[in-house]
Length: 281
Length: 173
Image (cartoon, rainbow over all chains, first blue to last red; front, side, top):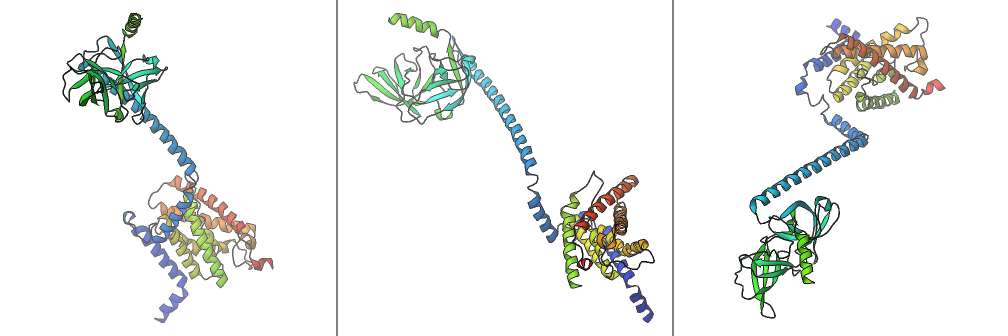
């Protein structure tokens, strides 16, 4: 026993060495990499804290590069969005064309250009609509603008790539309209109050109609062909001089949600206007 | 002794943090890894008993292991390194000259002796570590390349650290 103790004391350095090596080997060979101990891995509290702190500091070093990568990625995505949007626009043009040709044969001498509304207002008194097509695409002043549900307005000015149309929701625009199925016409004007309604004035008293009847364009103005939907009669009242009715018309176009519109081109418009001018001279 | 203990405690703390925070992320040319924390083992006073040297080295290796998710690897290499430290040094000492400074450093050992001492220990450590590592994946050429490159890189860094550390006061007096 005494010999053993002597041995231990004499060789205690060796014993420590062997013990440490044994512990290290146990850690090395018996630790499962998939079930690492919480205490002997970087997941323990101290090392996690240290790494968290370093990351907070070193996180700033890569920011310039990260910014560059992000902004490049952002640019790429933006381009993609633009491309997709353009494609979508193209398809919605095609859709609009399809529905138009299928729906009505009214527009015989008329052709049209499909355009996108890029600016629009309903809240002011004099409302205008900006379109993304201009003279380069065949959009000229005094062309009618029609949405999917009905009349929208008339082009007033156009440059090469854009056009501004005066909206139906503008008291400066007077539109010649009639009750569908009759030939008596009146003139539609917006009273500046509610974007859902306009007033059809100067409707002769002898015309028979009911609330709910459809109001369409008369075709007398050369801007719009005959029979394009404008709205439905909502209410009516006598005008001051008693010989005409004034009707409140619920507009079929939702002006607050204009998207794709068609600009109507009348090939005979110029000639007709010329003729009318000569006749009135 | 007490001041020396505190000094070594902070040196160990600093070296472990430097190793895990900075040098563990350095992987020069994909082969050279700096293992600068063994500088602490080199610096331990020669008068310190072997048991203490072993314990400190083992704990140091374990600390680095814990941070770098290599349980036991550095601890094993450090323990062996601590054990061979004195034999390696005595290899270089001429038998006549019995005077050797207590704490190894460039200043106290002199250029030639310290370079030999540090280079041998670094080589031993890198060899140990990469041999232990190759128990799990063996590739002879890659192993030699890694040992040589890591040794050189670590050795250069250790020389830098040594020239940064302040000289001992006893020396100046």
